[in-house]
Length: 274
Image 1 (cartoon, rainbow, N blue to C red):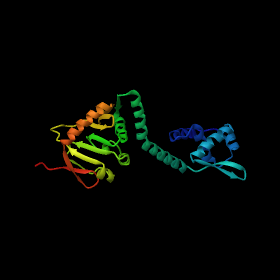
Image 2 (cartoon, rainbow, N blue to C red):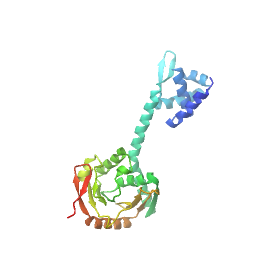
Image 3 (cartoon, rainbow, N blue to C red):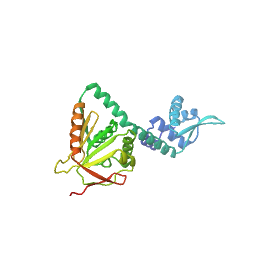
Image 4 (cartoon, one colour):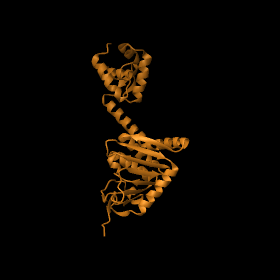
């Protein structure tokens, strides 16, 4: 059987969905021809029967075809075009699960590297690099101190931002945040974070204006800016530097004004000046 140009084009289009050329060829053929024994497929496609079984097994794992036992023996049967949509949805769920695990895994790997090499500076370029600095902060032990430019909502989509906040709650990380803003509108539905693990104070920008977001936790001092064309950040892993920066933060914190929480979703207001 000749493999026409249309089939070859469709095979190439299936490659980004995780199908090899061999799998795509078999999948397209079965969709066109219906259930068929491996021997028949081998003859029609002019490929070894072992290749048919190998590709067939992988397509079964992907739930794109199934094996059936009929009167003519074991056959390969397609599950229909919509099975590809189901396969993609499963891949997305698996990817989402891996993304949720990524901050923890990366944090452990970075800690391993830092322990091996001692104090070091890690550079992050672009918006994804800045996001990674924020993801790493989920590994803080007990507390996280932030000189804040903007909330996670400015960096991440809503779902990932909320997932990170839930991790802060799960890890019982207390967040102290200093801002130059007079008001912050509601920004989360993770109520426990706001009620139990987050406090915000305001420092007059005339006294100290923040141009970089600064994060301090454990042995990490991190800084980034995502409002300029040159988006980048750094992470300095040095216990001595982190301790020094934490003391400076505590000094600024003590001289900053408490902000009044309104509700349970992160809305705060600066107290009116007397």
